[in-house]
Image 1 (spheres, rainbow, N blue to C red):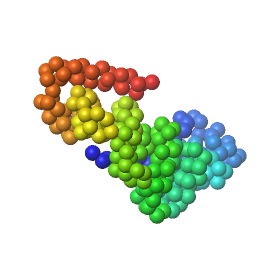
Image 2 (image 1 turned 90 degrees about the horizontal axis):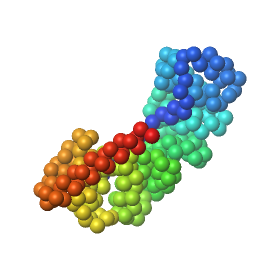
Image 3 (image 1 turned 90 degrees about the vertical axis):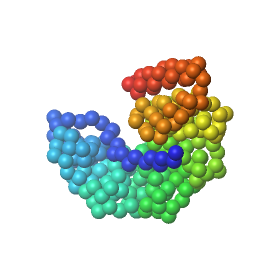
Image 4 (image 1 turned 120 degrees about the vertical axis):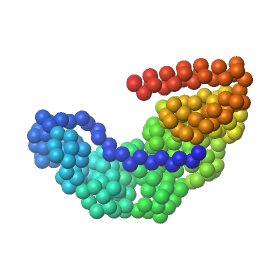
Length: 251
């Protein structure tokens, strides 16, 4: 399976309510970049104030022009999606890059996407890989998944199933159904890892718990390949691993 997941998500770096609005606006008007960005978040999300993309852009821009990475990433998102401004991929790339070069993982992911699909820049898989990897090494799950896809398909990097497996596993252990399914397929076919039907059953079963139809089909097919003892072992291990993943999500 080659799902290509890119999430262009707005980074909200602080929780604020209506009671904080007046104080926050005062600080923003005094030039505080942190406050300007968070005021933008409030207008963007409608948190504590009526949603207003134009105002969100205004405050993001003030903070972004001061070099505040979160605001640069958020302003890039607004241009990327045409929220409060005309959609402009080139401007989105400009602001994503500024934030990405400061180490912002969300901006690195999104800049990778822009290169991957040629939005606002010439398509360049090697550049996409570079930025995905930077975000992935910071723990961004979407970037980790995309890195796995790039290694699996030899896109922007030499094809390497072992590396693909490694990155898919990182995401699968965080509970991502598509990554779990991909691990199951790799175990089933012996790609990047020795063939192992028990392990394949475990991972596709985990993916099936999310309702993934292909995973449900593969789980049922794999069950027919396993002995009753192996199937019982696989089912017990699936239940244990599912519980561990759910606990980790709550941490």
